[in-house]
Amino acid sequence: MNIGIAGAGIGGLAAGAFLARDGHRVSVFDQFDAAGPVGSGLMLQETGLVILDQLGLRDAAEGLGAPITRLWGVSADTGRSVLDVRYAALRPALHGIGIQRTALFTLLEGAASASGARLVPATRITAANPETGTLVDHQGGAQGPFDLVIDALGVRSVLSSAPAKALPYGALWATLPWPEKGPFDAEALEQRYQAARKMAGIMPSGRARAGDADSLTYFWSIRSEAYEAFRTAPLAHWKDAARALWPETAMLVDQIVDHDQLTFARYRHRTHWPAAEGRLIHIGDSWHAASPQLGQGANMALLDAFALARAVRGGGTASETAALYVRQRAAHVRLYQLMTWAFTPVYQSDSKLLPWVRDWLAAPVSKLWPAPPVLAALVGGGLGSPLKKLGLKAGR
Image 1 (cartoon, one colour):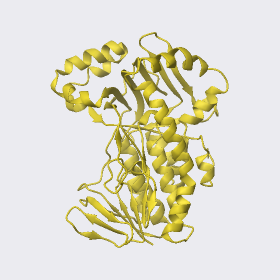
Image 2 (spheres, rainbow, N blue to C red):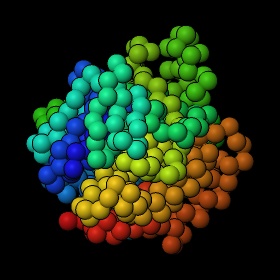
Image 3 (cartoon, rainbow, N blue to C red):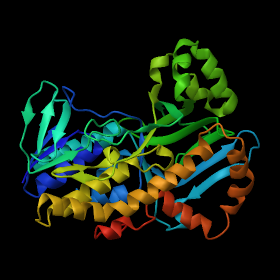
């Protein structure tokens, strides 16, 4: 097949690698002169790691990333632990990987190129014709026709007709050196909350290249409408608030001396139905965007990429391929869209009731069986058995 992929992000590159490896002619279009990653450090869960293993990349990803065995959150108001998810509650060897987006991008770009996919830079896709399988670029030129067109343009995809709902809160983030003598757990994603209005977090995120120093991703919750005020106010105002919420992070906050060191990520929620139309198929955030509270975005994109390649191997028509792809992924997508919708306001909202319920009711109950393994399965991406539906198993 002749396949065109719009977008050289995690989902687009993974799909390109799988499909080119299967012998298809694959072109991956990216708007930048040189394709590169956009976004903060991220979590690879077991689901994503199993997909990377299918590309021979798991060992490299784990070598560059940092193992995460626990998600731990504390209320600054009460000092109570209100989030404590341990992967070992489900399976002793289970863990996540905190990794810099640059590192994962480099691995996937290398796999796509080695498989024979053609990366086409400086070509911003602005439209697609699902019936003819053609793409239109920013200069009005037609690309294709293709037997299959894959929309991997992400949450802002111009090929998706479903509007993305902007969530009230986003986050500021920065990549900083890991402090060797700091008080932070090197195998935990740690967070501090003040109700649900303020949140700071630290995630070990490995290194961009072998031999580099270890890093972390620092993030700070902020209302989207407050970002411009943050930009115009003296940076000291934010730094004072950050130190007050989590005094131990002063050693990190002090390294930030310019507003530009903090990148603002807007969170959006969108599910595009149908996931396929004619020869056009949506994957990753162009199909199912959500806030990153459950750390599933990259993993869902990797699952989509493998599922699509598996569907193409069936040798059916474009409509038959699309139908098989959706059958493999729809239930898992619906489940995690629902879970993310439910969990996000508990940790990022203006609600007074939800943080109280979280701290005084949900947190104690979460320590009682069977909650610990269920929460570990939720965070690990395993609820709904997505790997089983793809003919895969967790672990090695």
